[in-house]
Amino acid sequence: MDPVRGVGSVVGTVLIPMRFVWPYGGRSVFLSGSFKRWSELLPMSPMEGCPTVFQVIYRLPPGYHQYKFFVDGEWRHDEHQPYVHGQYGIVNTVLLATDPNYIPVINLDIAPGSNMDVDNETFCRAVQVTEGTLSEVLPRISDTDVQVSRQRISAFLSMHTAYELLPESGKVVALDVDLPVKQAFHILHEQGIYMAPLWDMCKGQFVGVLSALDFVLILRELGNRGSNLTEEELETHTISAWKEGKSYLNRQNNGHGTAFSRHLVHAGPYDNLKDIALKILQKAVSTVPIIHSSLEDGSFPQLLHLASLSGILKCILGIALVHCLYYNFQYVQYPSSLASALNLLVQAQASSIPIVDDNDSLLDIYCRSDIMALAKDRAYTHINLDEMTVQQALQLGHDVCSPYEPRSQRCQMCLRSDSLHKVIERLANPGVRRIVIVEAGSKRLEGIVSLSDIFKFFLS
Image 1 (cartoon, rainbow, N blue to C red):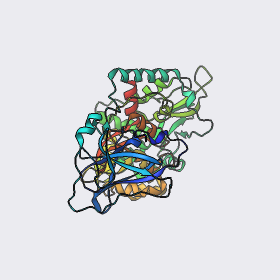
Image 2 (spheres, rainbow, N blue to C red):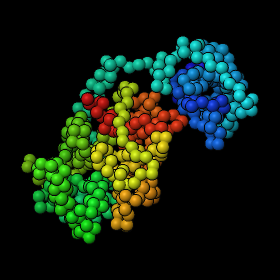
Image 3 (cartoon, rainbow, N blue to C red):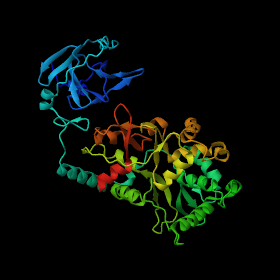
Image 4 (cartoon, rainbow, N blue to C red):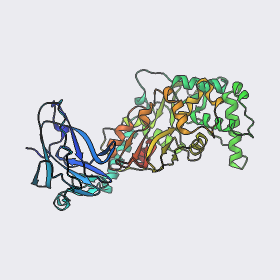
């Protein structure tokens, strides 16, 4: 008997799915046990059609295990299942056979109104729960440890260069500034990307980028009755003409009549990763083109790669990380118009907006790159932004999602109790740019952790 042996420590063992059930109701129900070293709470979900019965399926190695339920802030055991008195008070037990096809299930034939005893005292002497974690097994990290982790990450990024981000093979798409805007967005959609650097043949330089945000602003202009931009003009309107018009709009919005002189934010292959990450954060851009020229005057530049925070994040997964989360967010309630979502994206300078129901529970997420779905077959010419809901816009783009950001990847969720290391592992997956923080069980929205949040924490 090894009451604290974790599943991860068993090598080469067939894991058996075990269904744990708490049939006595509650607002929030969690499971903890020796198979998680009593160091983590597993959220349990209400069964469909039976909201007072909570369950979770977890794979365990054959052998003897102990477990306990954490219900509405109180530790409980199920007296209708085998239990023993031990170090952690009264705990339930299970002995698993070696047949992986057998799913043990707890008997639900419970007398009406029965209630399990609360047995906090003994267990809380051994472990304490804070924000969904067991604080004795997962101790609080000191400010000194946080600072040491930051210094290690900063030093690591300073010693590695953008050259190490370059893949062994791949492609990078660039657009000529003389392309019509309509054709450019069609290319972005067909290539499954949401931005591309701009090449000016006359200057022989990369001069900027065209992104999904430009498409958002164009659609808002088309929906503005006082706009000078019409759908007919969009057929021949070049990227360079749009950029000049955008500068004019910025001058109007600025109120001072001064243009925003924003040069292309780029880096070289031998720039260190820390400088590139800081450049992305300070300039509020999503990617930085990696451009190289073998000539001193910078002529004949070559576009090598598009560096992003997600690519940099993969380089630091092996470093010890601290347990800390930042989360700030804006959201829209269902049903909301696409116009309101686009306005919020622009005003909040956000890359995504969660969609919630009347109880603030997460339904979906609308990303800035989702707007590219409207470029297919000129769908934007047939819709009214004020009449189309966000859900309809998502459905429209459901079958044409970018291969670089599939929908299943964009709505990744975590709990506030999850460690930063676990969040970073998810963010390092291709296409994952943010993790939505929800309340266990209810999926009530609590925040968002983005790639920018992670790097602001590392480099602050």
